[in-house]
Length: 306
Image 1 (cartoon, one colour):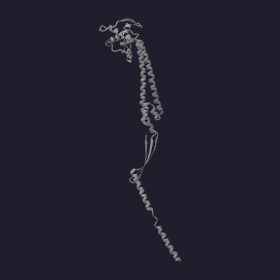
Image 2 (tube, one colour; image 1 turned 90 degrees about the vertical axis):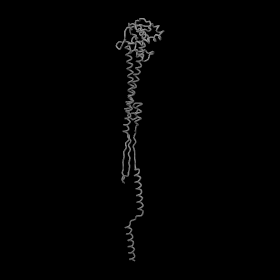
Image 3 (cartoon, rainbow, N blue to C red; image 1 turned 30 degrees about the vertical axis):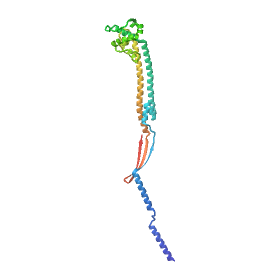
Image 4 (cartoon, rainbow, N blue to C red; image 1 turned 135 degrees about the horizontal axis):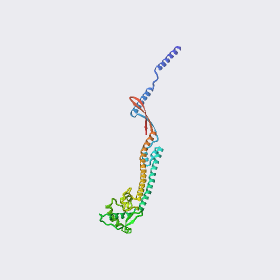
């Protein structure tokens, strides 16, 4: 009985020893093969397209084109669009100031223009002018054309006028002027406009040699030449015209400043929008995992847009 127990123990010990030397490997080869296959597929996918993960941080941006257009239309609006409020206020104030000067001085010029025209209508007379032209022709021995009877009249300032009969002039005005136009063309350098245009008011003050004797304080016996040899009324009239022109010039300067303000504001708006975009740039970060020479390389990228 004891021998049988000993033999059974030896057989059992032998089996345990054999199992210990030969480890259990069932299914391990299948798992390993599957891992190798998955790794191969991953390598092929990465090699073809690479693996990329990106993220971006969007910031507030301003269109440079819009900013330029806005300020070209209304100075300062492009700066306001780009949130540069102080510069927007400066350009807008310059625009308002320029147009205020233009409008204000243009009205002043119109007022002064009306003043000197009214003064001319009261103190310069076409009747005296054509009487003077007639008197010049009558005293020219070389002139063979028609002249009209005139009489010597004492001027209010003590001078002498040689005037065509006023009633005759009023009744035959068109014929008299038509006849004396020939004298005007031969003896003088300018033609008096038929209507009271801007040129009319310019000529009667600017050329005293031809038109100076038609002023209310003129003397037909004097030959006026200007600018120092003109009647006081002619001189006062020219001063008023100069004042009106000076006021119109200032108004024009205001318009020019407004135009320059549009251009400068538009250019500045472009730079302002660009600087705003730089301060509020778009940040993009990307990650790539690429296969290079059978090794994986991790690549990190940063892209800034403005």
